[in-house]
Image 1 (cartoon, one colour):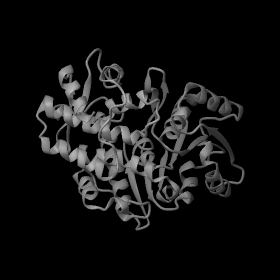
Image 2 (cartoon, helix red, strand yellow; image 1 turned 45 degrees about the horizontal axis):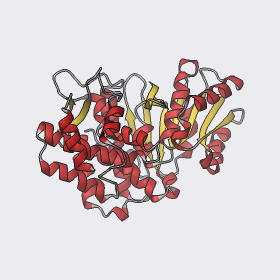
Image 3 (cartoon, one colour; image 1 turned 180 degrees about the vertical axis):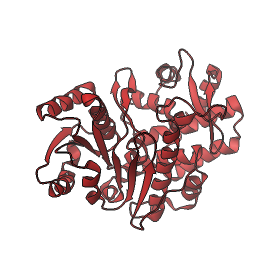
Image 4 (spheres, one colour; image 1 turned 90 degrees about the horizontal axis):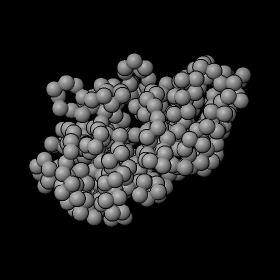
Length: 374
């Protein structure tokens, strides 16, 4: 894994290469960076959930101060997964049309992962693609939704089944925005962080296993390092496989699909709970599930299964689930984006940092793995 590029003690700039390069800035009080990422756009649409109305002025002010003639339109959307619907997306498109948004204008998202997914999709689909800048306000969004260019909305059939790949023009991971985040939300974001440790960066696991969880607060240097490392894991994977077409030939690495470690069951749980469970909580359970599956179907050592349980539980995340039947969850998993035809596919580990695809596991192994977490 590449090391984060630390350019300044107060902030780090992690560069995302590829066809559409951009920077991810990690630090505190980063609003002054926003005008540079937006550029000379005359119109900016700020997609923000109603619950974060008090943050709007902090974002609008530097944009207008840097260019007084700039027009900023606030697109208020529902909070959480309720925003990720075709109806909400359509309302945003209609607003862009009324404001005369052109290809030289910019969408800015301010919010958690759901806002980022929705705003990114609106930007990707308006005029077949306008620039988008993400200002994530949750730990989960910083290490997951804001980086990598995946955008999407939900349907009755499942989560994120409609979407597009659309890389941002820049990402501001302003850790000061986490200071008012409820503790449960911060903990949920650690689900994706720990996942990154298992699939790519053992140092993340070491930091989690040796740091008092009470010390993982927005001002903590350790939390900042965890964010930087998790973002870097995602950057490394995405640059090599932006559109999830697979790992390099002969390597056995699943490419971008590795980032979906634990997500097949996680998405099924989220749907079963009508999205009432936090994504990072569902991911923690999903990672333990695939570790149990790999233990039964592919010989993953029991010690590594136990390490999954211990790492997620240490930061306060669930490692078991019994809120839906195995049959119902299996039916949902069969429409997962990683499935091919009637064949279920899971990202599993051979070891820490060694992910691969397990294709077509037996229902016996699947059921046994679920019983182990239930």
